[in-house]
Length: 210
Image (cartoon, rainbow, N blue to C red):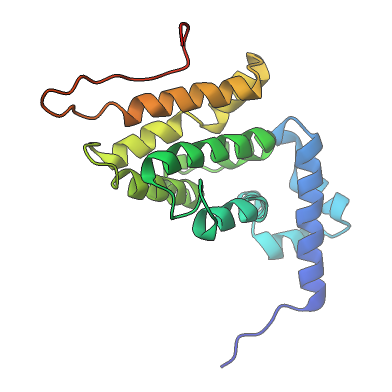
């Protein structure tokens, strides 16, 4: 039996809800302030329409996240270096993390709501599993790097939404400084594998004296 296409009004309402939610999250610094009622009112639809389209608030958050992430996903899956699959792994890992950090900085209220919402572990969320799986796969391509699964978790922990919010919102760390700190941390992790016999391990950074 052929799959039924959504009605035009349903597609239109879904797009209106996403655009309304996008606008509300863009101007409201508190993720709790963006309620389903506020989104429905801004979109000009009833709450029932919103529930039918997205199920609940976490469902709406996931849909909005996926919509905003589309350009990044395309660059990662089929784009050129430094994000695309042809990039050498030692260059691709820091590029992926930097891109994800910038995405979270640009979408702070949404990412806080997405990572803090719901009762299940954030580590079991689909969006986290995809990033972890991608990083772990690329890390396995780096010779001498042990336990790529744990290393991927550790690197992603450095850009959790609550940490990004604390650094950017409370400690007022400039964006470029956060990117530099993440690059240095990532380089240290990638350079921490076991040295070959006779090799002296040197970890490069951007500290004083460089």
